[in-house]
Image 1 (cartoon, helix red, strand yellow):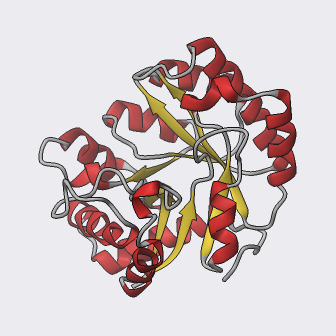
Image 2 (spheres, rainbow, N blue to C red):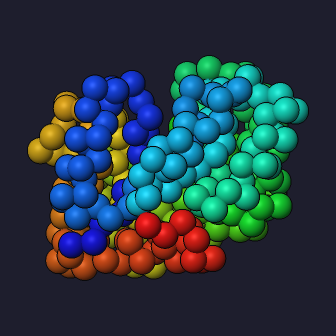
Length: 261
């Protein structure tokens, strides 16, 4: 089975003691590629994902400033992001967006940093990975005004109406462990209506482990559980879900044929 975990935080301190074993388990489970999200602890360090991708040939990376860290961004941050965006293992800008749940950075600053990163992604001709929490309307108002490229709504936890809005705007939807949670029927409805060529799967590890691992530290090997549940929802074998989501990721993020390993 050929799986891709389209969103990991393998740089997280929760993996400090056994990161290599976690990655080995993922490979043994059929996870051929993992995307290391490069937001890390925020500026000035922008290379959390790239460091991992340099160590493992099958890991890919993103660069970006998470909305929590927007207040840390300076002009030098964007200059460095522009430099990093051309690295052959950097395949997207993200995760970027808005988070009004914690308001770790002021909302106006979040919006300004989001807009600057959209412009940077357009300049680099890279897709974007969107984080939006309790900020859906503002996120899509900005996207509707400023973005014309491809992108992924990461860890989609919305309802069918939000799924249709994102799909109509040209985005793919990435489903993670929440899809398997007992009360997440709205997310499952969204997964059923998503066209096959817009589906992705992820773990967002170490967070949001799927059933039957809920409550544990999440890791990329567990992405198979999300694929299995998605297959049941859509009447497809887990192998078919694995293949089509891997193809979708590669079509969006590896169009230039780079970063193979």
